[in-house]
Length: 167
Image 1 (cartoon, rainbow, N blue to C red):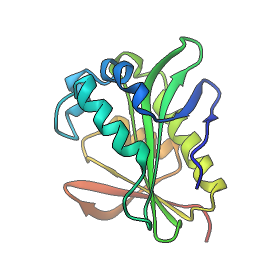
Image 2 (tube, rainbow, N blue to C red):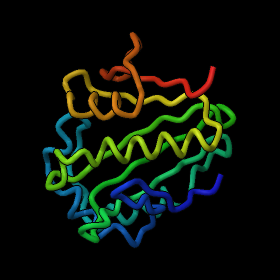
Image 3 (cartoon, one colour):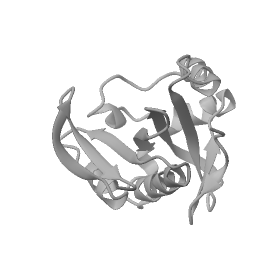
């Protein structure tokens, strides 16, 4: 599966590379982004190492990693990321998103997640899931905007959200 440049009305979804690490370290520097997921902001060097690993792809041939940075066209800067981990012979994708604190509240995460879901549907992925902390209302709103609904399933203290793209 080729991870390609794609976009939405306001965003370019650019395939992730290590070259994005310095700018993304600033975008992701707010400790508030880690309230629900834990951890802390990474340094540019640590993020570069992480991005090199992600861009190289999954070591498991049955798993495909798809990672993009989000470029806000009107400001010409990176504002976040979206990702999908595709498994089960390409039929299931687990998605995630993050938008830097200065750009939150503008609907960018919802737009990016909707764009990602549309791209996944074009790849014939039949089930899309996300795991969201029960107190993270903003992420729940993003998942809802992308057509996912909460299930009764839990994983690591988070609710599994799901969207079937075809019966």
